[in-house]
Image (cartoon, rainbow, N blue to C red; front, side, top):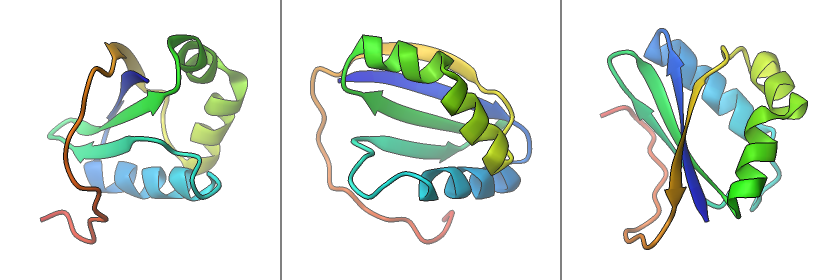
Length: 98
């Protein structure tokens, strides 16, 4: 699994709403690992793709750019992080920003 960070600059609440619109377009079970973090500068989305090649094709492809625009999100600064060696934790669905 290859992890990347997508940094979106702007109002965190507006960007989070765009993130919600974007992720609602993905079929159930398609997202392997995706985390949206509210920051002082906007949001950072941590996303995993099966391979680095999949990440490169996805992050630079026209479908991704079109999906971002349709969700009202600006183009992000994309940061390739590397291969996921391990992870731990319990999946959860946050209902508030608290």
